[in-house]
Image (cartoon, rainbow, N blue to C red; front, side, top):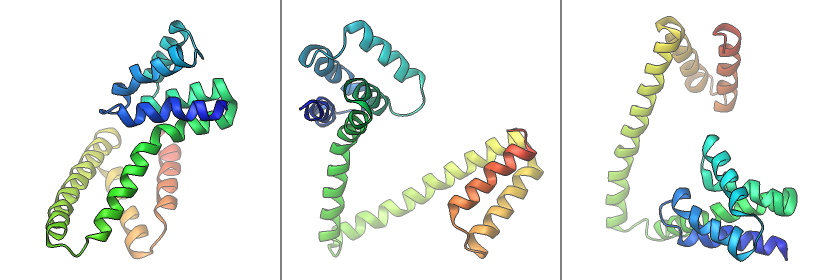
Length: 177
């Protein structure tokens, strides 16, 4: 029964908390403090402060922590899953809808407009990564990593996970990271 309560305590705020994690915090607070009485206001505020201090989405961190406190490891898993489930369900439904109407001229126009937008956003992201790498490591290290990464990914078809791991190792050894 506790696992169903954990699921509902985080699933319902995920559905009605439009605006992401910060918008759903008062809803989670109601579930955790008032409805199920798992925590006091002081304990919840400490969890909220801890969630704000750590990187990443606040709602999932809080769900994992509170779920763990209430139901152990399985409770943490259920809490995090319940937090992301509304977005996951909506994403699957929308992708199913897009796939169903993929031959529609409107859908084709929409995807034709989205692709260049994504390409531009990825280009800007790449530029910012290169810029920060140049500022932190210098031009030669940056160029070396770019060329080696390109050759490994495009010419030798090495899996990206191995290239990332290699870059992390290179940075740890040669860049003092």
